[in-house]
Image (cartoon, rainbow, N blue to C red; front, side, top):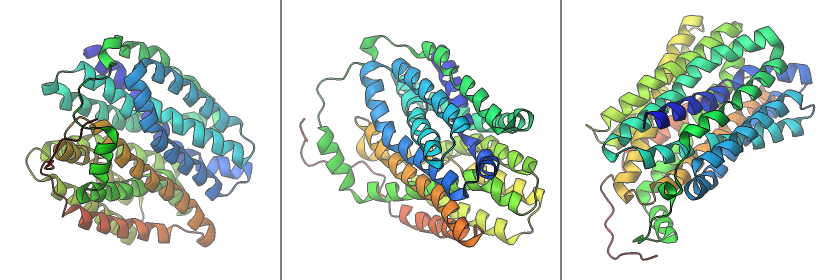
Length: 396
């Protein structure tokens, strides 16, 4: 178990850490290549959408053939995508590398695949804690890797930094050997009491599932817009690149605390109230940030507060899904909810660049983030957390 947790945590630190720093490349790449911010943002938007679409597929392959093979392919895709970002001379080439290749790579090297191995190798009574360690590792990767990436850009230029990260992504290959499993560990279970189509029909026909899915869309829109465009927003207002680097690192650091705290609170209070509070507090934080004078310290306070709320939606959302529908198809159902998150991520990244190109500022997108937070807070309140009542078994 210790080997699985260590190797899984290191892989998540790399895979999640690298992607969290992509906002640092927006200005140097667009300025040197002569591209608009929308072109860069579109590539990152495609990346998030590709991640969401590929995650269920990566999960199916990991369940059938083992995570080891999926991680090997994901590592190679990650390195190829980063190398493509460094060498792309057209916005199309950049979208294919930063968008498609890295999006698929993230699906094969992040939570869906790693959590499958943890779930199969950790005792049920320790599973939640083990997955919490994995989530914390991904958050710590942001805290660790963003300053590293900023230092690499400053020392070796944006292209040299990307080539170094491409080499770093290949470290996932030796780490994946620590997640090799016997084939019997991921053999399909027999005697399922509900078919896949029956589970999907049941979930999407259930109002609370649709509300959770809509809320997760808002989560993706907010966090990816901020993660991609905050560095440029700060630079537009005269703050140094070091402020943006520290801000993103603080998001990662406080995300560790926020995710763990949300999981603990979910053991004591209704999770729909926790989700509603998280989304509402995000809108409050953004509003106060925009109203306050923009200084390094106001940025640091905002980043710390948003870090506490960053991925804190993940534990209660997945816990509610498991509580309503059980665990037989939890990964699949969570994958569809995550796809909604990534559709929101796509729009948050792309609309930030598109509206900036139209207006020369991010004011409208900030307003959309605030409105969506209030919307998500309201729609989570009527979610029913009790187990669904099945009148008859849905045989496979």
